[in-house]
Length: 283
Image 1: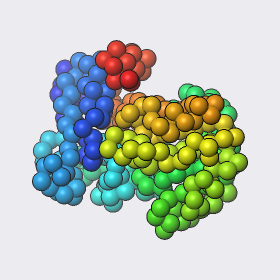
Image 2: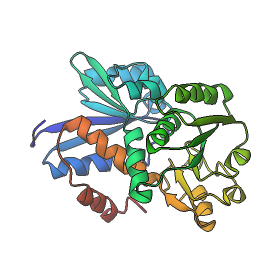
Image 3: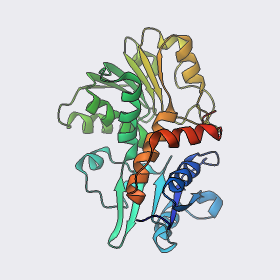
Image 4: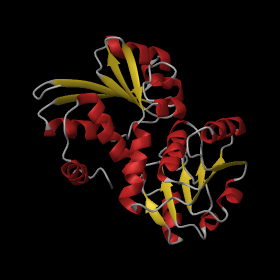
């Protein structure tokens, strides 16, 4: 698209009242003199189910939408996906409404890789414990493979879901060792990195997915939650001296990459980050 246009976007999800995505995309638009309308689309508040809200987006004039918890895997079944990697992930968080139908992308995957490298550079993840194997968890797992993880330990209350992800990871090129655990504390023993891919810790889902004492001996942690940024999980990790990769980094880069899909317009990432901080959105 070109400057001086209006771009209509949205976010489908539950518990998204405090999402910062509307601000990020409005600021991205401002850099390019594009007016952005970015709506929060909460099915239960709209009196509609997910399928109805999703299907109506094209006719309601949306160029694209982001999809968040708990709909990413459902969205993947409703779109055409060109990238074999995104097909393997089986979840999408970015959808474009094209003339020939909706197209799906996953910027959680690319966003996690960018956020990880921004903190740990070229260091390999080592042995990683991933708690949560839903939509974002699947993106994190394939991101770990791309980063050169040596072993992934998967934990989920839904054992079949974890086993399904394990099968998909083992089929990937350069697949690491993959082990499924039922207990997060046991899975975290002796690992290099610990990742929270669940909503536990976000506003409305209090608590932490792992007790502090189970973090001892790890090197780094990542939390997919970013509302709040300073979750109990990350506070405990900091107290144990672990390197922190905040969910804010995933939020930032998945948004930057989604903007590229939505608009095709450039971004000054440093300016965007500063503008977000200036408005208190990282606090």
